[in-house]
Image (cartoon, rainbow over all chains, first blue to last red; front, side):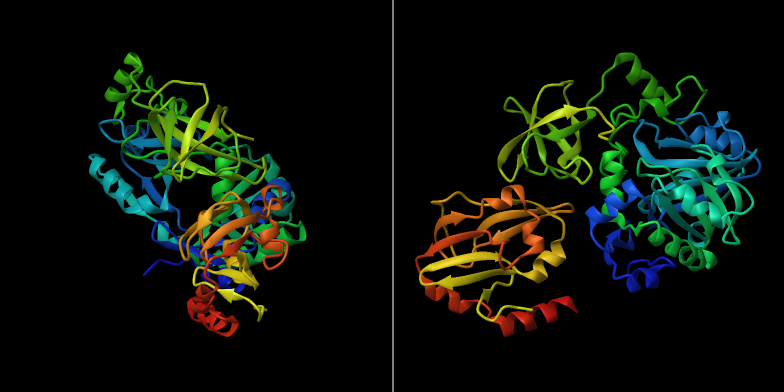
Length: 357
Length: 128
């Protein structure tokens, strides 16, 4: 039995098509992936992301524990700041990619991928040798994202206490949205201006129903996981389980700027340090654009001059660029044309800069 | 909704018979399930196709879907406008969004396909 979010009935009433994702029955699309995608780029989109996990880490030893778990430097955070980071295992493989929210000294929330909640929780508990309090708050928390250029104008009327445009990128403020206690986070997974709103699960329908008419009024749309995937891909954002996993180090996933080797000790540091010193990456994640109309999808094999050099990790038509794009993990440092095996035929693609838009 | 004069496959292709020529497309139900069609890969004119084997592929934003040939025969015409306007399959699945025409070698193969009523019953059962 798949898990359902508090907003399931609302999605059903909006005629959503559903899909399984990380054990959850989530909206894939309400109208059309392309329309929803373009609405987020042009005006706004409203997303139910309640499947994401929230793990609270607080009290004695929390600073040290979080710093030990993360490749990025959590000690640089001030209260109300958010950090994107990787959790690595001892061999430098990526356990998950997460957001760290710092509420106060020794008081953090880690926002983790839906499919990884159990795994991360076990991993964090295993590393907890300082008696830090670790709580899985996922079932009590609803995450609703409002993304797109109109996000600020849509959200502001619901937040009389302050101007949400004053919240900088990767900062959050705990306040009220439509009278509901909410952590208002200026973050997202679309490449657009936007907010991620964390509320208690009991208030999720009220928050959705407050924002929904304003989103529609602004010619925005409710957005499912289909468009979430194409939006993040265009923005060059990796997806855990596809573009990275425990078999890849952050360097191999092209995420070196989130690894701070000078921050002190953390799990996986020795392996990552050695890999950087030697420069012996087994593979590299690159962005590509198809040179014909064929669509490369996850798992398709990549060739160059007859040699197999890797695999596509994500691939889709780009609704904004009107061409087909993707990420590939390849074993060769190349900027030349690659070929992708699509149903037994090789189709040319060029390596391009990421983000795609 | 479902045109009376066509035959249908379980994989949601339709076929229109005019003498020994079969015109093939996908149904309105199929296009509404697939949505956002961005690319249609079809065989070249002259290709010999076999009843219920792979004919081509539809790509939507989300995924690729295989197409199957309702009949055996030679491809005599392909709807070239779909190369630049694949969205015609979404907009007009029974008219402008047709895929190709086949000169049938065995028109009796059509008898094994659904008529409109049985296709209607089939998609109602599938949708539950």
